[in-house]
Image 1: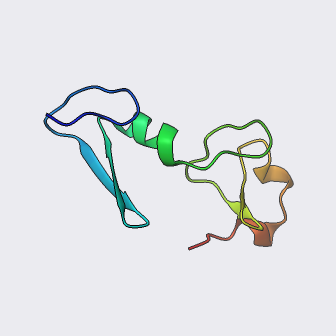
Image 2 (image 1 turned 90 degrees about the vertical axis):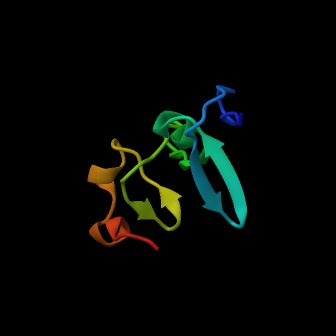
Length: 75
């Protein structure tokens, strides 16, 4: 049985995520977030669903102070 690469839990229904041609295995969204989400430069918090400014993830505390154009989604 395969294991989550973050917590090591052996589970038969792991979440498979491919990034840059490499497959990652996680048992839950929390482990996937811990391993793959970018961290903000303010406090190091994992950033999910917030804006980017000049390629730098913005945490909740930074979003109100960021210029409007910096909050445009980046792809």
